[in-house]
View 1 (cartoon, chains in turn blue, red):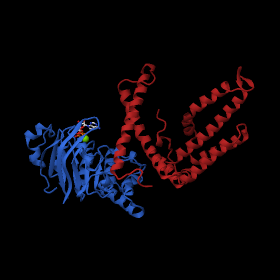
View 2 (cartoon, rainbow over the protein chains, first blue to last red):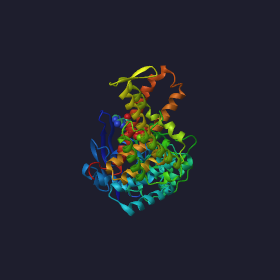
View 3 (spheres, each protein chain N blue to C red):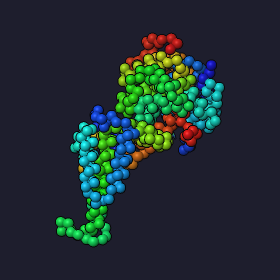
View 4 (cartoon, rainbow over the protein chains, first blue to last red):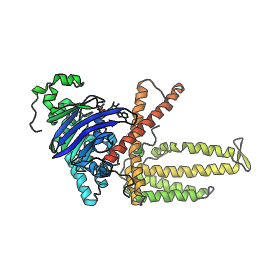
Length: 250
Length: 222
Ligand SMILES: Nc1ncnc2c1ncn2[C@@H]1O[C@H](COP(=O)(O)OP(=O)(O)OP(=O)(O)O)[C@@H](O)[C@H]1O
Ligand SMILES: [Mg+2]
């Protein structure tokens, strides 16, 4: 089943700057795909099209067969869960409970069912005991996890994460990886953390200068030195993707 | 600076005042303030009575009086205003410490100070004994319209974000040799306030996107 279908997507910002020039991308149900690319490539711009925050100048975005257009926005936003890079942008309610409940409540969920969803989502990220704390009293890594829970509570068909491992300490980074692996949901993950992409996503795509320049198995892309150099992608010092055992199929 | 930082007003404790239902405390506060405001400015025994009641509640709450008094600085602009009133008011003049001032002005200033102080102290006591989000929840219980409650709860949340942002900017300024005491540096304060505004505004925009992403559809539902 095709969850995400982006075809010929172009976007021009109101100031006239064109960020995307005809992008094609498709993601099937159950896949975990990494979206790689240098700063300014247009990754965030692409992500903001997936749930209709930005609307295309040309081309189309389709989520499980439903075109992302104004009349479909509410349903599209239920299907596509976006975790933003900065958890402070994402968490805006006075308590963790209220924040996680915000999305499902907008979908009309109420009462006991709402409580259940909140606790279930927090349980998935291991944050149940923080349910009555204010989000701004949590550590950065805890806030990132709650941010993931706010989106999981909406039971999305595809989870889109914008640089989920940034600013996390190594242990939190690994714990988030465990969480993402344990979820039974399609994932599209924007990241500059290439080892993380290799660890989590069997498939990667590379966006550069507003066009898709590569799509293939993550290990193959990361070992293609010409491709890497041409698009300012660099592996961390001493990291060799050839020497890393990758759990197949995930 | 540093004022308006939600939880900095809160004084952790487990007294009966802390444990009371937020909406009861809110009602008590509103009632108290209305009573204070409605009392004629020269009914001094009444004000003494109000102060005694307030002092008793403070004692019960276990919040140190010095904690509250320090935070009454928010009242300062009113104090300045009150001090000006006797000089600019009309009516019969009297002399205080060899300065001629307006008599009704003096009474009005006294009333303003007493009422202001009582109101501020009572509000601070509420803030010290109630977490900000409980205040918001109390307002909800009192059937404040949902959109207003929502706006308030964002405010509570973002006072902290803006406060932290301000703290970070202050650190950044200080690290590069800025001292607020040096008047030659003051223009920097104005400029960094501008930057703080823009940063907070942009954060607001991003939060708005995050809300939309989670199905928030303003105006579509009640
Ligand atoms: N609001 C905006 N108005 C105008 N141009 C913008 C706007 N937001 C982004 N751009 C431009 O669009 C291009 C793509 O930006 P985008 O944020 O999508 O990059 P990115 O791939 O997410 O980069 P990074 O890895 O740094 O997050 C950049 O050249 C950027 O300057
Ligand atoms: Mg980006």
